[in-house]
Length: 154
Length: 71
Image (cartoon, rainbow over all chains, first blue to last red; front, side, top):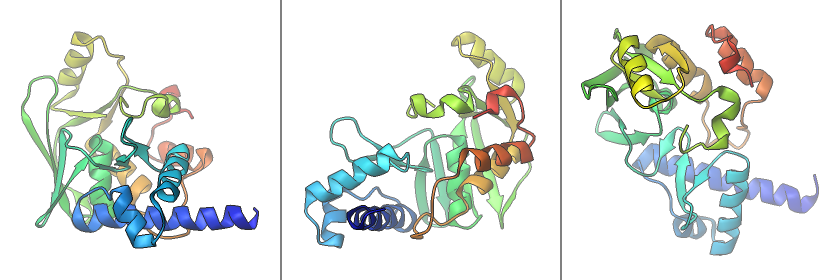
């Protein structure tokens, strides 16, 4: 890896840290301008970093604004999977990601969603890393090898 | 990746919306997948995405060995 490649990799790691810290600590997606301010870099440098991270499947960007749509397991926009832990809340991209948020923040929290077939409210609760009993079923429609063909649908 | 009340509800929904049957996981399997995939701190400089081999091992460890889970 050349010196410039190493510098870009370091920059991307810094951007990733800021993005995940914003989601974990504040429950929000960091905007490019906020990341640029924190790193004292111009917006085009952060835009380029977002694109590299998206190319590497670390981020998913919104189609027009190119701001963050997803930093898995977090969603920047409301979804059918709300996660709460204490006074904090987040949106997960799917049931796997919603549980992933709880795994990422330390193993205590709840996922609220509803059955797509009948609309019944469903809650999964995790306490101290243990999922409490439930009879619900997770459904994966897209085979694993094709998840990134259309990650928003997946 | 959705959560249904039961297998019956998942199959009803798949039929109604012409979706593939896909793969059904217990909530314990889904939680296991969440832990294996997301427990690492992605703020750490050394974090990296899992390799295909690592991902395949995680799936196999949770009993997800059908073609649906092949990467």
